[in-house]
Image (cartoon, rainbow, N blue to C red):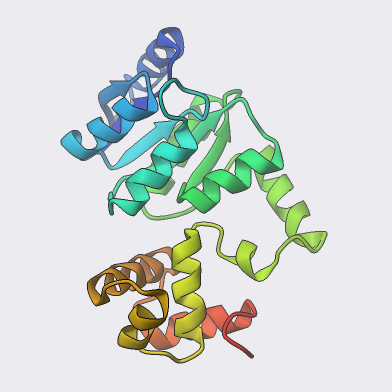
Amino acid sequence: MIRLLVADDHPAYRRGLQLMLDGSPDIAIVGEAATGEQAVELARSLGPDVILMDIRMPELDGIEATRRLAHAGSAAAVVVLTMFEDDDSVFAAMRAGARGYLLKGADQAEIERAIRAAAAGEAIFGPQVAQRVIAHFASGGGSAAAAFPALTEREREVLELVAAGKGNATIAHELMISLKTVRNHVSNIFAKLQVSERAQAIVKARQAGLGGA
């Protein structure tokens, strides 16, 4: 059973999702949040597998809530479910650590498919959003930074140094952070790049232009 947390400040929309997913045999809503702060708190206390996260919410927006969960090492996969399809929103969510991005016009089958894909560790985008991502890279927007949009800025810095062949201790010294923090960043990078060892991460990073060819 996939444990789902719904974060949206509109009660009627949360209720609609609840009714929509009520008959799903493998998805159970375990909590609802009306603000970004509540989403972060409930994610920590309930341990959901997937979070459907709106962007515009009181107290804390969905992108910042996603970023905080990623920094805290949350295992929950965030799928943004919003009305906004502009490039800034899409790529900000991806950089914050979101695993998926859907528009609120998505139908039941699309939402359920996204939840299951995110729970399985896949990245998932609605058709309109996928077209924008493809267009972004096709137009030359896929810089080295954009090549790994799920990475935080600090994780990208660490990956750059990993790709340059530097060890954890050297990275800790250069970035003036603890060795434990470097190890945590490297672990998160491996998970987001879907690799199991340093050599594989270096290959992917160098193919994207990081750390020298």
